Image 1 (cartoon, rainbow, N blue to C red):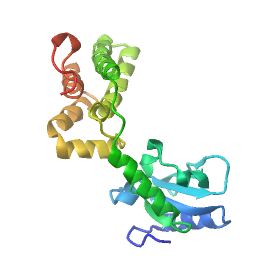
Image 2: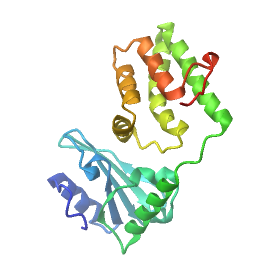
Image 3: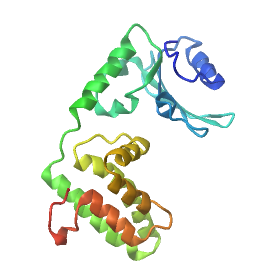
Amino acid sequence: MTAPNIHWTPLLRTLCEELTRDGSNHTLLLYGSRAAGTADKDSDYDIAAFGARDSTGRDTRIIDGAFLDVFLYPESTLVQRGPEWLKLRGSVVLLQRGQEADRFLQGLDSVFTQGPPPLLADEISARTTWAWKMAVRMERGDAEGHYRRAWLLTALLEDYFALRKQWFEGPKKALQWLQAHDPETAQALQTALRPDASHASIRQAVARVAGPAPNAGGDPCP
């Protein structure tokens, strides 16, 4: 193993032994909060295992109250560099064959640095208009309205980054980034995400993310 600085819990050691016992996996990456050092008692064990297989598998057991989320990838994945693999950026290498994992992670850093492709103008317009449309429809007060409210709140966090040509790295990192770099929007979203949030507070969050309502004029993406 090549990760002396992480917290080697008994379960993590057991998982690594299990994943390498029969030789089917030669490279193991720990990612998520346990790799970042921000894990709490409810955090998953997020592991990517690479070996000689034709398709992707998944292990999502619960062991002693701990949630596992182990992806079993074909070893050919280690030469890929698409944005779909950015969730593994910042992984801790638990085990690797040669320097394959190091090169893979360096490639992901390069993809991240380049940033996502910018949205086309019509896509920007579609996303901002959609957000305000959902803000109207959530006020129906029926099951569909409640569903659209939840849908809108989920999309707002992702769209904040897409509209600003930045990668969305999941809710935890996204909210931490907002708190550090755009605290006003972070506060607006925090208020809107409360279970008892008013429609007015959700509309304020929409305005922070998507700009003023289309019929109000102004730049749709401040």
